[in-house]
Length: 448
Image (cartoon, rainbow, N blue to C red; front, side, top):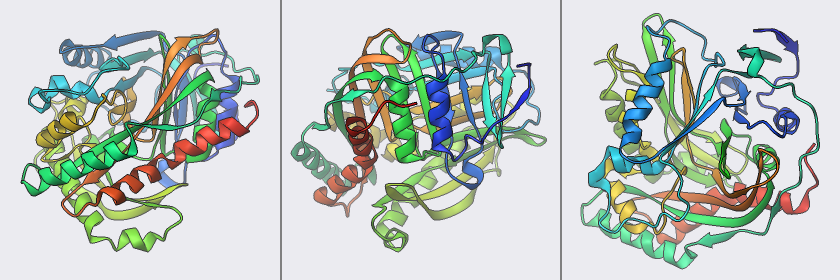
């Protein structure tokens, strides 16, 4: 294959079988980083896969400066109009939620949660070329010399031994009640509280990702094999930030989600909920404020008011806010100005983060951070790392194989009208897709 060559192939977008084919054909000895966009319309634009040429873990306060320098060092200079697609040269990134400890130290609680998984604050995977699936074709982007030739194989079937809440359901309901007390005391209007679910795991994270993408059809899905016995499988439906250079500057958009109902219930139930509409309205205002720190004055607008999106296991309320980045601000400035995403913290943002840090027993790691791609051209797409599985353990023979455990968090936005039992049920609704993945792994056959 030659640079920028085109090979007739079925579109990966919106087609879980095509995702599974690529996952199964990536060489076992080459690490894989991948974006996987499913669905219809503007959300199913492309999928992109690459083997990183380098990996960098960032920890501590210096992570902020390194992140800025690394992204700026590879930027192509003055932004020019380009298609919202990876060029092949850029970084896959994982920004852990706990990066906030160096951005907003006043949000750190006196007794912070236990760091029992030791995730880095950020991971940068540098790529110089990869495979882009877009509009029914497959292209090599960037340097073809670093792009492996896919060869179909049978993925080893993962072993997953069930799903358990950690902490207990009773502890989660108790902590929801404490957040409600904070709201009534005037400490915050809303705070997002999460519960962790876990399982033992042994096998291929590519096989796990194939099951996950099939179950969730994520609009902003991703797989990152991070080395050192770490991997992330994200089934996120939510866009944190997208940047697209254009003739009038770098356009920015974000699509926060607030409000959830299981897909077995009617769309109208969520659409007619004043409580859920008010929650989303609060987060829209918060995100407008975050974008206002780095966007041109007068450019920020609500480009799509509240609408209801349906996914395989849930309905969500979502809105879109857009703006134009100021000329003196880069992508790293934008990401750090808005991080962590407002939809998974609360309002006011810093106080809500402090309450979360006070009540949640364990650190979130990748959950509620961001996973995505920052291209050297100025294009970037980062999800909100919800519906995200974090795998940690001992590396096995293949680049995709781990013996360890899986962690999956599910959370809810708590407001004055919240009920602990209802919020607990909502967290289970959000964990439903992970339960389906676990059950599929237990009942299925090797992924081909």
